[in-house]
Image (cartoon, rainbow, N blue to C red; front, side):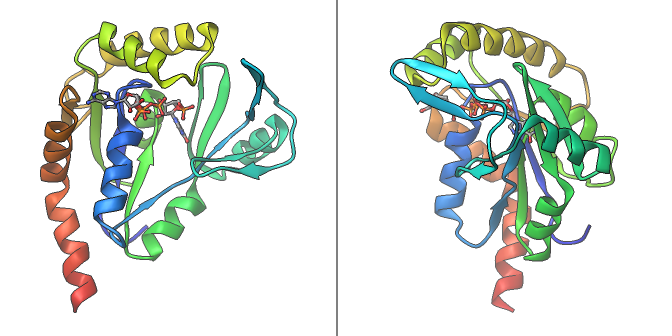
Length: 209
Ligand SMILES: Nc1ncnc2c1ncn2[C@@H]1O[C@H](COP(=O)(O)OP(=O)(O)OP(=O)(O)O)[C@@H](O)[C@H]1O
Ligand SMILES: Nc1nc2c(ncn2[C@@H]2O[C@H](COP(=O)(O)O)[C@@H](O)[C@H]2O)c(=O)[nH]1
């Protein structure tokens, strides 16, 4: 795969990856491309209850292409995914074609993946910059997830458990190029921009020439 060096953005659910990513996409139009993951889950809001509907027709949101579990498994068996993982009882995956599509446009490809995704990408020749976004503490993470109002108590507990594992594994030397503690959002964003400065500049300059 050619093009600018991609970026893997990881870290516990609720740490602030999407918030930071949205700022990057807003501030650097035409520089970044986000790989929309595939997910075998469709959260349907029915009154106050979030219902997982596993067998639905493929639909899309800004963040995901929702597919059935069977379609997802077929894709995995066909080798369509550069990485895939089960997170909180659901199957997530980044298709190789999504990454190639972004890279062919000379954009910095951003992959938002969990820690299993990081480990799987390390087995490929993608050679991204690995960035982990971490919360200041478990207590703050829990508060952010609760205040986000996207989780049931059950899914929240699953995410907190996954977060504990993520925070432990992320300490492994060499797994991430940089770990950013997202306490103050502006400071975390400045740090992220610093880390990506070289790649951003390369893309901006290539667009001028
Ligand atoms: N520095 C911050 N201070 C306070 N709140 C924050 C900060 N960063 C993010 N948030 C809030 O925390 C919540 C979780 O952030 P966000 O959805 O970006 O996390 P995420 O890592 O993308 O989670 P997921 O992996 O589940 O998609 C959001 O409501 C967001 O507005
Ligand atoms: N390995 C992968 N992990 C992914 C992918 N897309 C998202 N994620 C991670 O899942 C959790 C939960 O995300 P949410 O949007 O349901 O809150 C979070 O840690 C994401 O980083 C993927 O394609 N592969």
